[in-house]
Amino acid sequence: MTGTGTVDATHMFGDDPEMVHSSRSAISTGQLPDSDDVKTAVDETYEQFSSVDDGEVPDYIPALADADPDLFGICIVSTEGQAYSRGDAELLFTIQSISKAFVFALVREEVGHTKARELVGVNNTGLPFDSVMAIEINGGRTMNPLVNAGALATSALAPGETWEEKWDFILRGLSAFAGRDLKIDEDAFESERKNNIRNQGIARLLQSYGHITLDPHEVTELYTRQCALLVSTEDLAVMGATLADGGRNPKTGEQVIGQGASRDALAVMAANGLYEASGEWLYEIGMPAKSGVSGGLVTIAPGKGGFASYSPRLDDAGNSVRGIKAARHLSNELGMNLFASGTVQD
Image 1 (cartoon, one colour):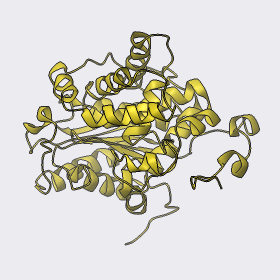
Image 2 (tube, helix red, strand yellow):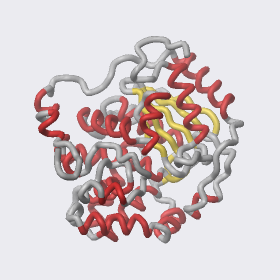
Image 3 (cartoon, one colour):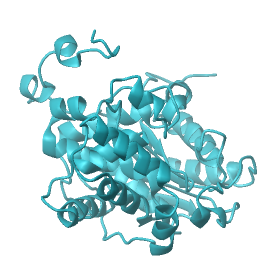
Image 4 (spheres, one colour):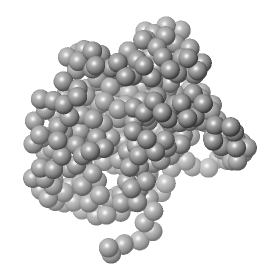
């Protein structure tokens, strides 16, 4: 145990698992139920939750405040590339902090298993996503890549000598996950750029501890740009299915990242994807996931596929109310819970 209260994970867990067990598969086995059953479950889920009106559209980012609260789209994409959609699944919205999980996967592919843990961290903070206290009480370290401090540190690790090269790496990588060229919502980017003072402060704090070497303004620009990329619910489901199949995009067949990076990204999403509510999420739903403030949500059943939803009404923790209900229902209906070894009647 170090003086900051963090654990020496290398000492605890030993060597890089890719070095020790390089011949083992990094994904789960099993498949989704028959196509008709999946389609029926998606249809029933949409009908059951489309009228839910709990939650509020966020207003602290002006570009998101005008979203129609009644929008609702859901989609499942299997590792074989079959897609099942309902509602507003083709509507474009900004990916926001869902990008954190996929940028981490890309950077993890570059730096490796051990370096990713050392440089960014993998543990839950138990604090809000934009917490400064989490940095201070951990000796200036970031704790995981899915809170803002860790996401800024992760984006700074993108390979490239210049800001442009780093951005090109992030843009190409996220586009490869989606299976198409993603574009920026310039209005959303400018709106967030004018309101990202806290993230700039976090980046400067990380710089003061020597945790990032790139200019804090440039780091914040990278992160803000990646959050402003436009995706659809179907795009997110494809991105989730790519992680579900060990980094292979089921739409294009491209091996976007390796199985090890995919495995590690899923582990981080399971532990931290819904911030301080991640434990409750796993207890109730049992899948790696990541939410975004625009109302997007992506969940992954390793070896089976990805589920995504879009609904702008958020709960107090900043997660889509309809999305969580839909994910829980489909997890139970389609056997997507990682911890369920059989049918559970409760």
